[in-house]
Length: 190
Image (cartoon, rainbow, N blue to C red; front, side, top):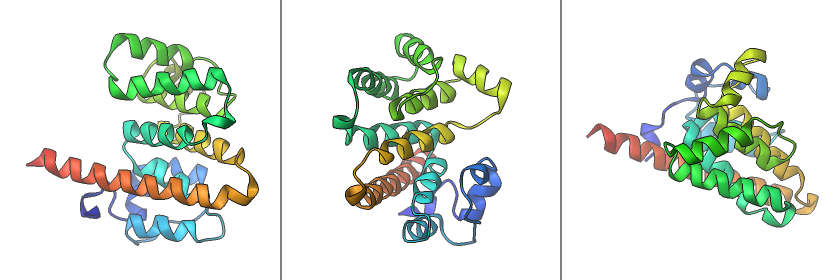
């Protein structure tokens, strides 16, 4: 099922998207992407599996994955974050809607001070809205950087005793989304 991944090996991903090296320390191998990701999860810095998934997924799918992860943590967020989550959900459902694009651009123009703020920023960067212009003026990062920051910031709010199980669930969700995207891509080819 995962044979059609965008990046067959970890090295392929690092070669195609060098920005990932700024977000993680583990060096890539020729190992299959999914196996590499699962190995990261059992390694010294399991959070790097989140980072790897954020870059492995196509940008819109990564934003959706982040939305889904943070939707499991809603009791840790305030009303503003709940509104941002709804905005991101609407944008992923209809990214070409002028109303959703304008709302995401406005949300992404404010500094990300919460995990959900990072996800809104990722949507804005992905959408080439005003945040993309701001990002390219300082230091360019792909939307995956903001997805990674948002999920890890959300994970930091989880009780320490529960953190690894939540991290593992998020990574498995990311892997499943990568496999679904691979199937979708191969179906589009035929």
